[in-house]
Length: 171
Image (cartoon, rainbow, N blue to C red; front, side):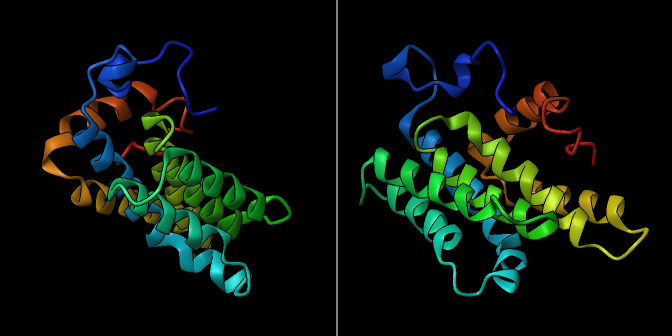
């Protein structure tokens, strides 16, 4: 479980009683898609004929551009998670990262799920003895990709939810 029991109002849209603007929500979704896309080849190597994780990333981005409704992006995220069910290791985590990216349209706090699963995928794909270093490198890369407008929010949220996200944000 990567979501806190109590929702952070900074990650709830204004229309739902929080403080998150639509612009920042879209930036979080785009960043989550970028994180998931970075490790997507780990899934596609295992299942080259399964388009669901790539479609979830594409749908997340389409949602940010206003091309599809939230429900469509969220559904694509669910299908990507379904692609992970019978897999293990890096491929499984990469599919989950894509699924979490698709779910950001519904709940912004899933952005950390996409990032955390991407880090887990990078760790699992690393050569023996290099998993920790690979995870830290992926975490640092993700932070470099953060849009400046949401950087402080994401870094603070990583600090707050790190324990829920397998402590992958210690980088």
